[in-house]
Image (cartoon, rainbow, N blue to C red; front, side):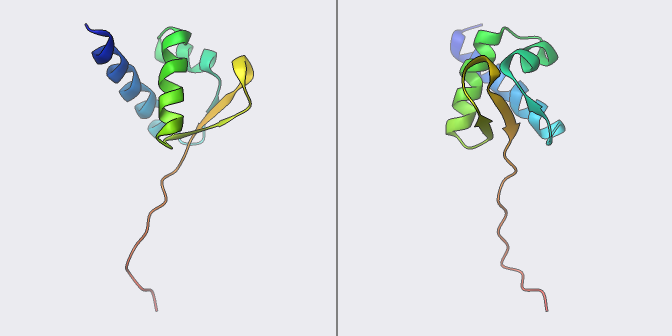
Length: 80
């Protein structure tokens, strides 16, 4: 599998993890253990997901905590 395809697969796995665990607050190490991927790969993907506003990050380095960013949903429905 090419590096780009592998990266996309890990990105999807991370997004699925956070979608299924919306209130999880995890480190790179803990996510890598849960998903079964190398921490280096998880760190790269989490940085990408942070830029895309899919996850939030608190802190830096090995102790940084990542959590799902629940999307803002706008509606044109007016409730009376």
